[in-house]
Amino acid sequence: MTLGKSAMGFWAALVFVTGCQDAGPRNTAEREKAAACQAQGGTFGRLGKKAQVPICTLPEKPASDAGKSCSDSSQCEANICLGETSRCAPVVHGNYCGQTILSEGQKAELLCGHFE
Image 1 (cartoon, helix red, strand yellow):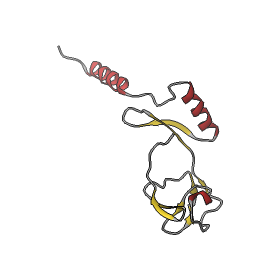
Image 2 (cartoon, one colour):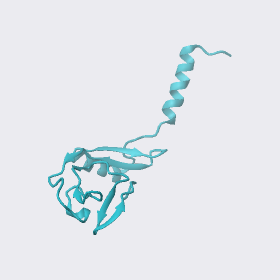
Image 3 (cartoon, rainbow, N blue to C red):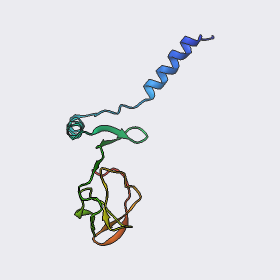
Image 4 (cartoon, helix red, strand yellow):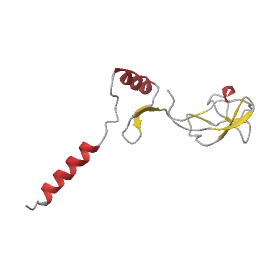
């Protein structure tokens, strides 16, 4: 049996669509998290091989205390005290993965992952 181009396209699309994972909230608790995320201007989505990790991505904004001297991340609006400069990070909700930060005056590498 030979399939025409349109039949092959149909089957390819069907396989593609059924292989995709839903990126939206999957239960009541996640719907509440998604609503809270969107209320802050964020985007709710999922990460991981099978979209198993719910995440809220908030928009970046300039930090009001950017460049201020610090010795602990709790002293900064962005909750990031950059270890190389001992200054508050310039952006709230920025990507600081792998950066050296200060925590209680001690340098530590910021590991990224999903924490709940």
